[in-house]
Image (cartoon, rainbow, N blue to C red; front, side, top):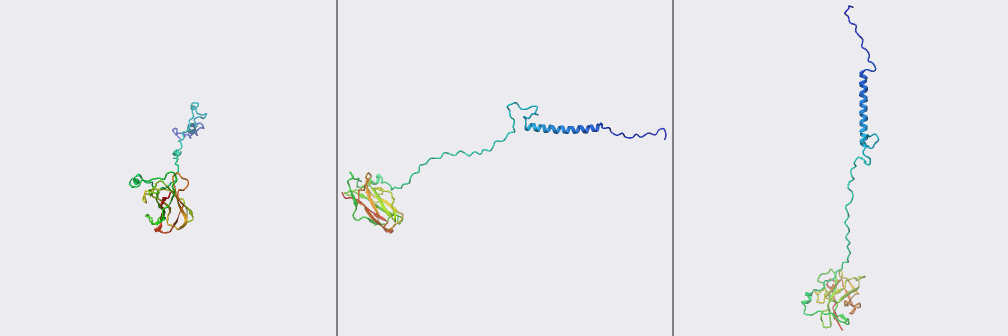
Length: 238
């Protein structure tokens, strides 16, 4: 070996405190610190009143996460019910108009004193077919005074039984059905003709009397469309 040969130095092992190890430890500390800061900020955001928050909200102020209001499920107000008083439907025959009497040559009269008495006109009851056909059973007629003048606003009442059932029909006023005469009246007692003997009666009243002012007139009925209109005329006999 000549004088110019170099002696190769062997590489030295790094010491424990070398700069490479320090950088690794510093990086680990930095990442850990960053994670702690993130956790701290999240915790402070969720609960700003925690004791670790260096800038807590002022006393008396509560900071909470806003909660959306619940949907409006309240039912609309119910309008107040209107009170309706039920009324019973009553079908009455139409009262005669002033025109129907004005066209008559005879002035209608009413009995005075309540002393008048009435009976069935001779020849009645009369059995006829009704103009509406066979869709009912009717009793009709008129009322006249002792001189043959028509009397209006007399009360005609039909009662008794028909087909084993009591008759509940509205009273009729004389003059309410001038198709018969100026003092004509009509009562429908059934929806179809039916046979009966001695069970249906007709009486006459004044508007202010509690007792009848006529005889009790018994009528028979027939299951016959040609005899479903029974004519009973009242005449004053005293």
